[in-house]
Structures are given as structure tokens and as C-alpha cells.
Image (cartoon, rainbow, N blue to C red):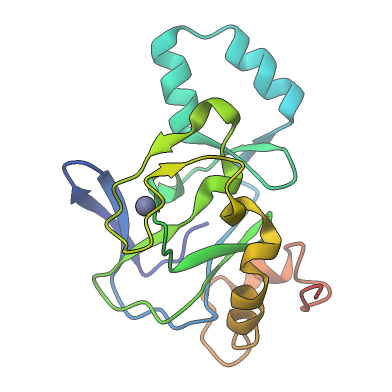
Length: 185
Ligand SMILES: [Zn+2]
């Protein structure tokens, strides 16, 4: 489930739709948690589904499903699939099932994630995010695709998670981070 203080609107003609904050979202806020309405399939099931699809449906699959860091594929039931990539993102996955705000996000700002690490090899794409550090070409073997690349930033954001309002707190408590409430260093 996506943070409730978000809405879907056109990001730009090039990017299409994106997710925007309707209120300020402070650093350390959980912005998305996997929930029971999301459909999760194994990598083997995803391969079987893809093998039977037409070209048009394959494109839909690749847009709408994304791969979790643990190898499973997910179809979210809300607007999460419209999250755009950015080479300087304001959100990142703290775990396969939890995404967190890396910094304060202003009302009206687009929520973004550097999802190189969630791509399959055939999903590499040209990027025009506009960030000064834009890598131009996003690939699943980017250094930024490795969880350890984000480790310090995630730990810094997570250190705030108890001090900020957490509208997704109930789901967070049921997530992989819920029982221990601590990230592995
Ligand atoms: Zn970029």
C-alpha cells in the first residue's frame, strides 16, 4: 500500500504518470509496504506467464509487475506501479517489502525510486530524469542496483522512523521489518 498522502498525475509527457505528495512526507516515513491485496508470484510463475503473452501484453507485464529484491514478482493493487525512476531518488527500498523516504519530500513533489535493482536484464532503459547525476542508461547491473549502495542513506532515514508519523505503521508492523524494527547493518 502506498502512502495515503499521495496522488497520481502527469509527471511530464516523457515520463507519463507519476506519484506526487499531497502533503509533506518527512524523511524516515514509510512510503510503501507490501500488503495482502498485492499479488505476488514466484520467478518461475512469472516466467510461465510471460512465455504465454503477446508482445502488447508483455509490455504491460513489464510495466505493471516489478521484481522484488528477493526475486518474487509483484502486481500492486494501487498506484505503486506508476512510481517513476530517478537517479537521485527520494525513496528507496529498505527491505523487499518496505520502501522509505530518504529525505523530506515536499507537498507537490514527485515520489521516485532508483529501481535499477528491480529490473530484469531486458528492461534496461534510457533515462531522462533530469538529475545532475543522471546515469542516462539504467541497467540492472548498475552499482546503484546493489542494496549496499543505499545502506548508509537507508540507515539514516530509518533512524528517524520512530520520530515521524507513520500512516502505514500497521502494515509496517506486519512487514519483514516489523518484528525486529531494526535494519541489519
Ligand atoms: Zn536519470
